[in-house]
Image (cartoon, rainbow, N blue to C red; front, top):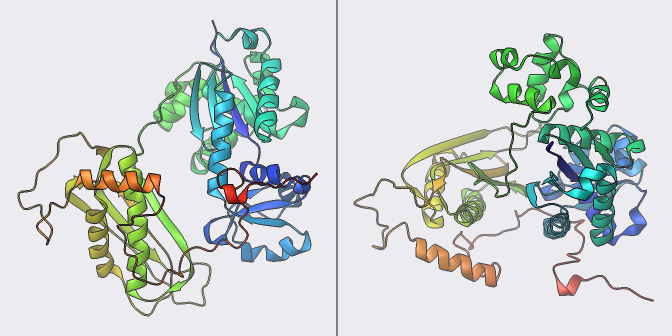
Length: 429
């Protein structure tokens, strides 16, 4: 039986979440902003059609277009988006025995052997679209194929060409070749801009040009990842569905500030809070970190201000998941790289060299803090996490004595329609 993989991808997910509770915005230009309302991170089809507003562009650079076309702006409402994503994924689980959560708005489904789908894949894809929209109000497109890469390619085409009805199956080799001949190679899943440039240099411009290449030749010229992509484009599965998401190998937590920070104490407080969040994510996947990196920088978009950016890393003698140890290490590095006289716009922390907490590690003979308690107290951290899950933001290990007006602003944020009793939608009849 030929494998059949489907990729279900939500259309303009952040914008669609806002429109579910604001149907008056359907058909109007809408955009969602990043943390601190700095950049555009999601655009409706109407905004894309205007041109001139690219993904990730700073808002101040396109403010004239926003005013000219009356584009409705929203601050990122991650609480709402995460809950809507969970509802979409819960609905998708009813259509396939195996599901891989690929991102907040995408999921791979293994439809191999699902009888209604094998009989009529397009009709089954339409059933999925209608069910998700009926339950959540989120529009989706469905791409199908014998491999994950082909499912991704089919989804791209289903979104781009409306005559597909939002569903496309690339199991048929003739239809597959027809599509590949007109799609640029840069649209293939896993082929980045640098690889695209190299492929173009050797005459590989379309997906079909790549698909007909011998995989061994591509591996010799590029790497095994691109070689596997060639096999996948020819219907040979090389990537399995991951029903259990793998642990992250890096955890990054950073934010832009609502105002420039000039004092070390303010920057230290912000960095401590980011370290606390990163440590919580680390413990959530039952891991420890062996390397901590921090960075600070001024605003690169304002050349009128003095510019400065620095980063520092330290490899730990003993891997840790203790928030206190991570904050203390980050602050030691901050003292080394901080310079007065600058207005800092962003800072962050990255945890790497991540391994399972059960992995054997180096034991320190003098691993004690100034108060005589061990610096790695997993039981304490476990209790802190349990309390914070039950009573959010009750306990914070990060510094809290400083002014927090630096926190990211969200002046256009919508209500938490699905997660807060005080912000539920009110319907008047």
